[in-house]
Length: 164
Length: 105
Image 1 (cartoon, each protein chain N blue to C red):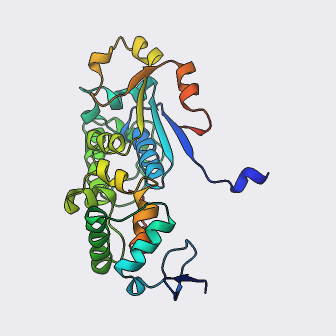
Image 2: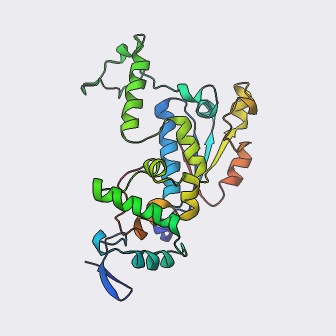
Image 3: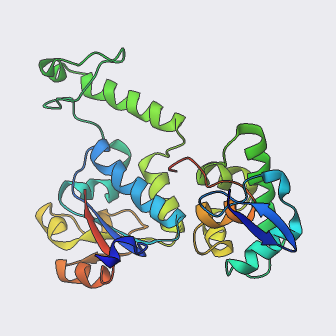
């Protein structure tokens, strides 16, 4: 149990979801790691890949359908059936973007550039790319490499792996 | 209250090891702290960051976010991490004689 108090020196964060609320935690945690001097790698897989697909990364949204924690602007719980009304998802997304901006959280593209500039690695999952019929050309220019699971474990050696 | 001797002066420090009173700080203390933290010799770019952080802290009561810092100080993210390789949140605020930033960004 002695290593419980050992400092974290390195993290590898997997982003597997492609909604705005699915992507941000991984970005915030990797940036926060670098701010603390912790080495960080970001690995995008499955729908999380959308965050580094150039044509999609500026259009991530939050899902109002099936989101039981969704609340209306005045704090009341939103009935889940309301989520299917056209325009609800884009309304909720723009609300969230506004709130993030107030907290100085940048939009996804700017945030990824910032994280890259901190020296963190940004990687795409090979299997997910193949599955979605995407190639390197579809990815944001800042992506460092396309990795297999094996490559990912090698890159993550000696650090913690966080799945988001 | 924990204290620490820096350049012959006994100064109060907080739980993170940062100076308790930002007013105890001066450039000589910054240099001593930087040497202790392995940052090496401070140049004018380091002081650009440090002085901007101190100004923000005096005005707002907290250190600025990295995004704000890089937009307003003229030091971009890449350079910031070159200046403070072990992490700007921890290091720059400590050397600037400020508490650890409260924000997550």
